[in-house]
Length: 243
Image (cartoon, rainbow, N blue to C red; front, side, top):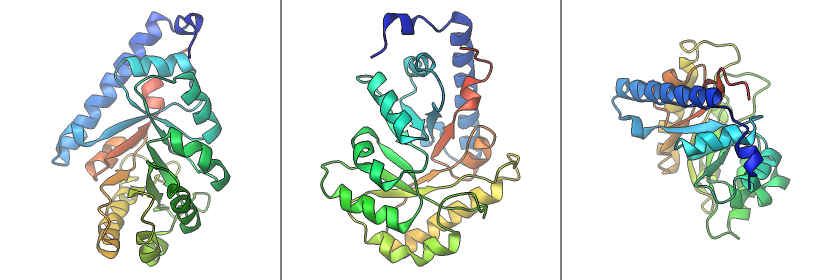
């Protein structure tokens, strides 16, 4: 848990900036959701806490942010320990190596970046020994960038039946990232493609696949317009903060 000294580190100006940033992000999510014919409550904000000090994360939690995302398992483990007892749902949004899955599973609500059939099948086997395994989204490389993890659009459809056979781990949706350097508008085809793949995979697997995890600080409004149910936002929440 945080010490009184750590709790006092955040100055009042940074608290105001974080509150204002959060209000702005929430408003933008709600407006984008309305443009897609939904209410703002249809979209979950996952605040990305990568490299952020615990006092900033704590203030977000105080402001009502319950869903927090970390890129690396080791950092997630540390923050889970530091913020133990708080009303937080942790999301691992980065790559998970199979050898870190057993320790990570009990700490998280959702894994966003399950990026191969081999990993999914390994997680499904592990899930059989747990009473409440986390939900997973399958990562699809909709931008065709060589550096990105994930199924290609063609591969994930070919793997539809093996994916459907993984019954112990809850497969609840798909995840993607737009290409590096894209604008909010040029990212749109990646989000459209993910939604189309989700609809096709529903038909092939019988899975509901209710979630689309897509959209980051520079393009989340476009992602919400195209159906995102989970947006992963970091820098837009901490902009201007000097702590």
